[in-house]
Image (cartoon, rainbow, N blue to C red; front, side):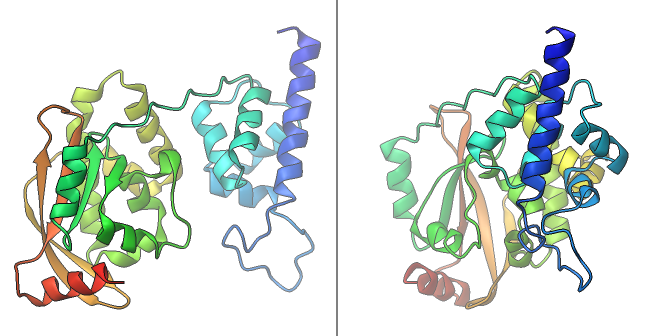
Length: 278
């Protein structure tokens, strides 16, 4: 790329960031504006903090003074500025970063979907080895419908939601223990996923956007999956303790079925029955 073209693209990138920063209201970003606030959109320091970069660096970026921006930082900026898919792609193009091809959707067999339905009213969902949610049954769908913003795309991932969804934090009675355990499960998988761009992109996104995940990840704790119990909190059902187990799918080693269940006749089973009727 010639120098004039590179300079023009950097300026265009800065202009685009400023324009989108001005369109996000503080309340949309979870910020309560003070009585003296004059900026209609977000301030530079607020975008920088949300994206996990320094204010000085972000200021230089808007001024067209930065050469080269990593994909993970661009993705963090897109989230901080609440960019749509087309805007996100435009941001990548301005930065000279090719947009990643969307992964092929996981194929869930009819037999697995039948199993999900058979275990109702217990909760069951299918995850990949990097914890992407690819299918679930009606009781899980009833839970997901209560989320303020239903996730999609790469955000439809159990680990991502654990660290970035307030809704998830409110559902787990022992959130920190659950988050540490999930991170250790992901770390246990890391050795099998060396060179997998999807796995590496997930870890990069998490470490760039969540200090808590980064601290747990850098501890290098690992754990294999073992069946146990989890305590959930639901606004209508109260606190519920469920057992959980994992069923591996033999003809697709990338997928597993996770089932959260309650013994028949228990208060937890009655709570799940009420949830399935919601």
